[in-house]
Amino acid sequence: MERGNLKEVAEAIKDAKIVVALTGAGISTESGIPDFRSKNGLWSRFNINEYGYIDNIISNPAKVWKMLRSLINDLKDAKPNPAHIALAKMEEKGYLHAIITQNVDSLHQKAGSKNVVEFHGNFREAICLQCRKIYPIEYALRQEIPRCECGGLLKPNAVFFGEPIERDVLIKSFGYTENCNVMLVVGTSAMVYPAAQLPVMAKQNGAMIVEINEEPSMIAGIADHSFYGKAGEILPKLASLL
Ligand code: NAD
Image (cartoon, rainbow, N blue to C red):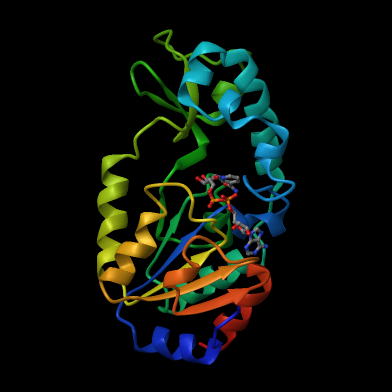
């Protein structure tokens, strides 16, 4: 099953002009943040159809904000784990050029990573659904049903199901994807589109695809190297070879 050679990956990274990491919720489980689809994931506690869609927050903001409050509280105390730190060190040494993350937890930035594209936005901020004004998330948390000065409903500045990805985020992500020589795909089930399309695009453009996951993900079939285990153990080993 596992077919990966860390030394070969490290050599490819050293030879590469551009190396990109695509990360998902799995990179943060070792920081105590549940992912979505694993056995103890978020969607085993909250029904995706009742909480995950933009229509849910519009039709029942009190219910969805109650769930969001506890989620945001969990994120506040979370600390980066060795996987986040390994990627930050790789960037610092010039071996990693960008992280495209599907996560909203800001843990890459807390670990010291500088060039982070937040594909699905973030939970640091709230945004008005009417006028698009952005506030620090604390502003929203002070109200039971958070509202903008204009009266519009606030939601975390993150992409809910049924919402499009920001245009500039797509442009940046496609740019890195088309030009990278190596893509590390870490802790993502690769089931959420369009993010799941990025490794496929990178492969089509000739990049080496490196899958790091607890179990085979949807991109296992196109991966050149697959490592099945904890990202917090595999990434520090890779970083130590650079
Ligand atoms: P997902 O839940 O669909 O998949 C997580 C993947 O990570 C699984 O394949 C699992 O096997 C793997 N995994 C779990 N723990 C791991 C570990 N320690 N090491 C390596 N792999 C591990 O997550 P996704 O693909 O990111 O897509 C779901 C969406 O959920 C994303 O859009 C993201 O925005 C959102 N989300 C974000 C957070 C966060 O910000 N931390 C948390 C939950 C969900």
